Length: 330
Image (cartoon, rainbow, N blue to C red; front, side, top):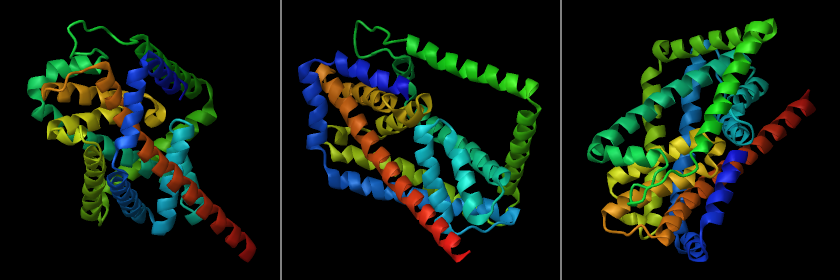
């Protein structure tokens, strides 16, 4: 999160006054009704994910309610925004408290679900690569943090990559130390691994695998649609081509992976893709336009993040009320 906040500060201070005004103007000019429709589509994806999760838990002998599954997912999302990868553990812990699903079983199905999500993202990325094959050299330069629209292209803060990879390496070494030196940690990890294997097996052995596949399609259709429709909320982005929108979707997703919650990275990566594709359509990449494109990325990020925070807090409140009712009855 600190890296994301630094990135926000770095780019904001690099804007001149005109660029800052252009950034803020995007928020003033946006069609918020369209953004609201986008959020409704996002809500559908969350409900569909909760329903899909039930398919994975059923073969393991558990049948949580849709409400409890949904609340666990939303609480997991908001936990992920606070502490990296805490969402999966929080989600499993919530369902253990509400429906008695063992933590390792619940966690295993969640990790297996992530494998399916990565596969789906890979499919979308593959489609984006195929339809952007002619632009791959320029897009790769863009991914490296180089402004390919400029004749004097220069790398932008390349050392941020070293910090990120350094943290990943430190985390891996820390894991190896705990696994070798701490028997309790090793036992818990192997328990999680067994739960994960059980979760993956359920995908292929469950009776409802076609329903699981249907909800997977619904979820990813909603993800792309909720992102796609936001481009009609601002006049300039309404001109974006399908290949540009898919590329921006992939870039934004990578932004979420690089920094927890996509703070800083999501708007910048989406904005960079916008600048690249709109420049091909004749829009000059002036500093003001570049900042407005980052502003659009920030607008999309802010609306989606506010939805997660609102729904997550609402679900947290619902779970707490449910616990108090159970305690009073007992």
